[in-house]
Length: 256
Image (cartoon, rainbow, N blue to C red):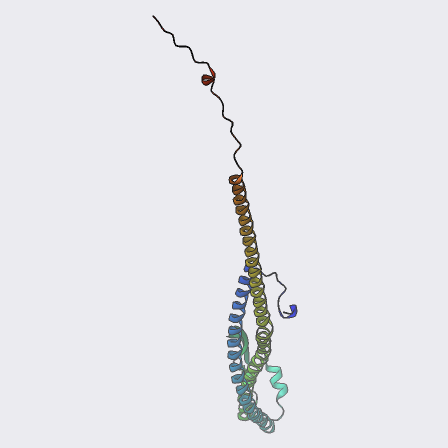
């Protein structure tokens, strides 16, 4: 097996356990990342649909705001300098919050307050065109609200796009690089361990056979030695005369 498709590791039982644990973690991580990618893709498509809808709405809103501004200028004359001089506080304030979608924090913009119109601004267009100026103000407030919503969607769209690309790269890396390497490493370790077990079994058989052969040789030598002892003839034993037999017999004593 080529070393390029597996990890360079010494094949042991402990290494096999570690590789199996890593493979299990890789499978679990791949499943979680796949689910995360699917959830983000669903939200991405929903945001894309909302962007298309808001852009179409933005066209009509900005058109109405432009027409109302033109009507107000036609009715009241040039009043932009007066408005700029009388502005002290913002009419609309925006707050940025985050929304958690599958572990991804998406920035969202919300309109939190609408400032009170000052007295000087209320007096703008008092002589002529006051109604058209109020209509233009309301139209531009709607346009700003639409811009805030569109900006929030566009920011979330860009963020989701980057996160989905990163998540898909991780999913592909685990599926096509990490998992095959771990599986090949596990197969390599199992093959090497099996080969080692076969070699050990063969060695034990050879050792056992050698011991049996030596034992048989010893038993044969022992039997041969015992047979040689039984074949040897006993030495001739000379008869030893008894000292008693050699003594002359005493003459019988007769007492008259």
